[in-house]
Length: 177
Image 1 (cartoon, helix red, strand yellow):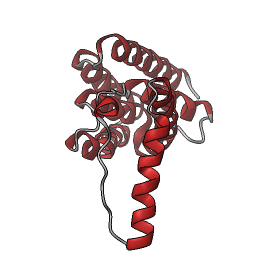
Image 2: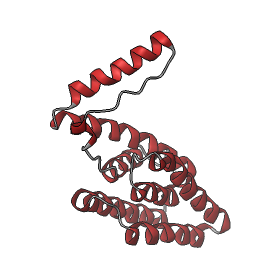
Image 3: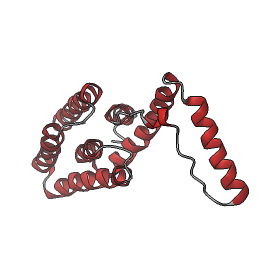
């Protein structure tokens, strides 16, 4: 890794930490963080390696947004989460953002289980999903059972799993990101 890449990694780490902390305290990820960071990633990559790096960064942004956009459209997460993963893609490119997303999904699953457990909803939620799955396997019909009101009020701050997942993916070395 050269010095230019190191600087990008440090900038990304700072962006991820700010996003996670901001999400924790204010329950949103601000545009003033994601848009300039994404722009920096594109400009920096382009300045370091030319037009091919410009497209590398742009493809990463587009793929990061595309991965989470369906979840946003279904109401499962906020737009800031989508833009944050897009920003990650700008720094790490299309393959890197795929790995970051995989680790984010794992971190998000663990985080969701912890939130359900802390709020006393884990057992009921597990039974609900078991019933949905069993019904589907036995009948071939998907019958959605909505969560109880207490569970519906729970809010997952997905900036935290995006930060943790991306940092975990980065921890697996340069062969991934």
